[in-house]
Length: 570
Image (tube, rainbow, N blue to C red; front, side, top):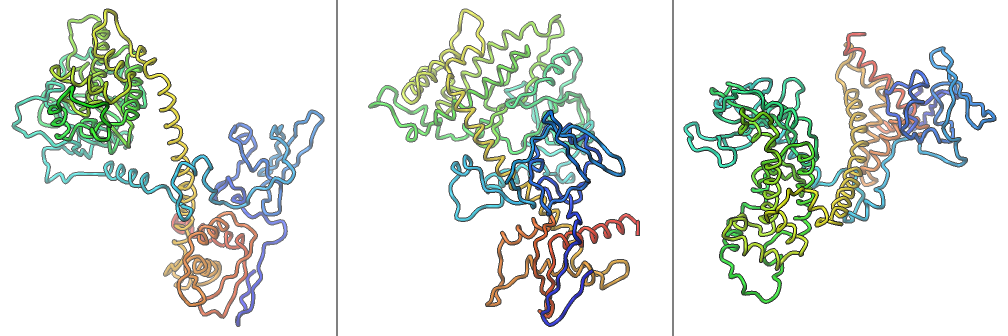
């Protein structure tokens, strides 16, 4: 029961002795999560729970009455009563360690040491993810949600099979275009679309004017659909359509927002080709520094080699051939992540119905994949596509010899040189050598940094939900035809708590803004800790001393009242 005293009197309020705070007293629980109805799910869980090792305190009373009896075998027989039913089960959890205390409210933990030493030091601790990662994710979300005005681009249909909301990812070819692309031999276009079956975005690659006359090639399509690899854009389905006004073949792939081709990332500078073709070969005094020559770092080239060879290894192991190892068909996302795109298209477009075995030519195509990989690596080493032209191969290899290691030169020579035997992508593994460990280490370090950023956002999402609920209560003009509802009872305490959070001032009367204060108070409210705070009315004539557990009870009861009214239960 609350009593308000004026003239700066102090109001003391607290919970009755033995009253449970909430399920949120544990660091692993959030408000409004229903406790387990039986101990069985708890026994099935193999996730370590720090709450199991917590020393019992008055601030973290159990939801159910639990009695433990240590038998002679060292195990503990637990007795738990839930909803009038008593359960007995063996608890294999180690006994609590004496003196081990966990916080009874949610907190932001500091960055792990191995992550803190990776990043540049900031002047103040950050409660949010890094700006670079946030901007990258925002850009991806922006591209994923992009749409077109159907009136401005009538050539794009509203729906294609089960896909809708098409958005061109490449400039659309003119309607009277006759020439075909040099890659597939057909005019192609690319769209982002949403599948109405699962509401997920996909990339649709349309082959213009292609009529599929035989479905035997779908055997190869089914094989491609089974390949899941981190460096391959997965093929999901292939279908024919006339939604574009003509016969078209459409390949549906996973959509990776923000991706750009290797061609646009590394080979879009015309000055690089001019430098390569105009250089006077054989007239140099020692090795030329790569930073002066405008060439890519060797570490980046090896990172690409590891990813592309890994993709080829998976494809060849499945009995297929890539056939699109080309800078225009390799996607780059982020800084160095590669994915081979448009797989399976050549297998359908060039399918020979007279062949009894559709895999008969795969060994030949796999050898061509290795040559194509060698050309991609050579072009990266020269930072120019001119280097892979037949008349420039000798000059290109001289450039590699001058600026890069012998391992890179030998790998390129092995891939581009005809052998008397069938080669395998596994043959280049010894040439890559310990650089695999470098890439593995870089990937794991990147994973540590992202996990640390994710840990921050986990807490931020929880606090946002708390603020959203609080915002539905504070300053509500009317509820159940009562215009004073938000200014009376429990709601008045929540209003003063809102002022305590956001509207404090210094002794000079200036706003006092402290993010750590806001976060700390919200975390304590979320858990309902027994700590007391003073809430002062705006006219400074009343001081209410309450605990966070009281505030949480008021908060939950009030929000449940709103929910009941919204569902028509009042």
